[in-house]
Amino acid sequence: MYKLAIKKYLEEHGFEALRPKAVLFDMDGVLYDSMPNHAIAWQESMAKFGVFMTADDAYATEGARGVDTIRQMVLQQQHREIDEAEAQRMYDVKSQTFHSLPEAPIMPGILDLMSQIKACDIACGVVTGSGQRPLINRILKDFGAYVDEAHITTAYDVTRGKPNPDPYLMGLKKAGNLEPWEAIVVENAPLGVRAGARAQIFTIAVNTGPLANNELLAAGANLIFNNMQEFSDCWKNFDF
Image (tube, rainbow, N blue to C red; front, side, top):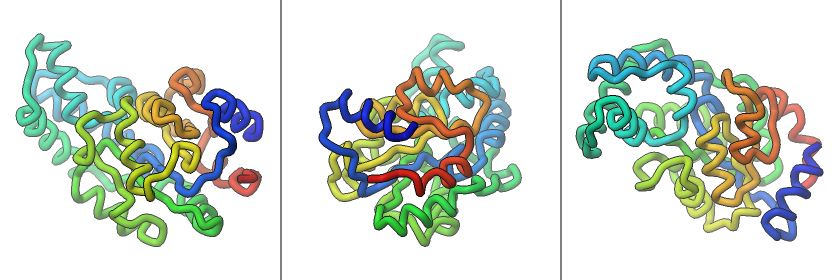
């Protein structure tokens, strides 16, 4: 399965080989089982501003910069354009709501996967559409054995978020100015998968949410696992 996926990826992009020096992880729904909390926070906070969001909306826009999601929703529903500063004020309310909820658990299997990756002398990085300092601090606390701050790309490192390739191109830069064929992206949502694919990086989707696998494949995923533990169990089969 994985050999065929890699072969197809290499042929599509004209690369000689996949030789990963870094694995770039999304955060929500990948490092943490946090999307249910985000769905609640989006719905409750945006309702205060007269913006209607569903849980499906939260999953569909997961990975994008929060301010971009807000500007898009306001334009669609209220037919007005707001600047980034106003969107940031609204996003701050969303962040406060999110942090008032119980702490999301670490995704099962992720620590074992990172341990295996480190044993292969491959670096781990994080590429997230969030920029909230408490979340960055938690990444460093929970995954400090595998990830340092220099290898975390946030919403504030780019002006164009996912599904644009910019976040993952920045992730490549932070990982040591790597080429696309020297990295792997791990994502759980269509926007993030598109970003990884547009950056020409081999993109693995781990379907930890309610979306059908076909949606992730259509977004450009090269390989799909049903959960993070399944991916971790299969890591030893990869032959880079």
